[in-house]
Length: 259
Ligand SMILES: O=C[C@H](O)[C@H](O)[C@H](O)COP(=O)(O)O
Image 1 (tube, rainbow, N blue to C red):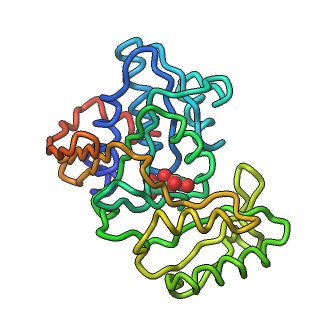
Image 2 (cartoon, rainbow, N blue to C red):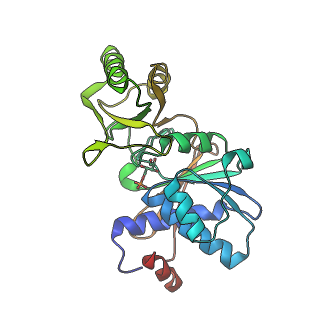
């Protein structure tokens, strides 16, 4: 592990700690993003080492491809119907474990999967721990039809709520709009710090054309915050606890650097 950057080490130890929540027979929601990718690797290793019978429900084609590549059986949410646990990353989390997600464009499937889970565990490095959400641009997923009208309506809503910061911008992939797994566009909202995230989430979803927004309110149960020196803080909102542990980086963990 010594060749990993401190940020990757932080993601890795959070991911490694998170798979302690996994038990034999579970149906698990597999998040998307660089931190969630570490978790998929840790999960594959745990399954192999302990002979666990696990099925995963991925939240993106990227995660589905990685899971299959590593030998994790993948099923759809409709096949699973309900999940025991979802482990995913986040772009920001606050003291109540409300989140901004969608930096990687997977917010829609992620929110559906996390909501259909008994427990959501978020893994993140310490830089994502904020007092108020909103420094990270809030992604919303919109249908391509009439997206410019939808964008204008969203801007008007944000101005009325006095939360619009710099601007709103259509996410691009080189010269063309970024397209999600569901065939939609993403608009990133550059906001002032969000005072009432719950209200903003509800209001945004009422604008015609908005499919979903990246605010995850009352969905996350546990956040595992990783640090570059191997420490993790485990913050559990239901138990009202926060514990700090040190994760040992084992020689065998070097295998992960090759993925
Ligand atoms: O759409 C992407 C997801 O919400 C990610 O979980 C989030 O952007 C965090 O990604 P990363 O772990 O790469 O920072």
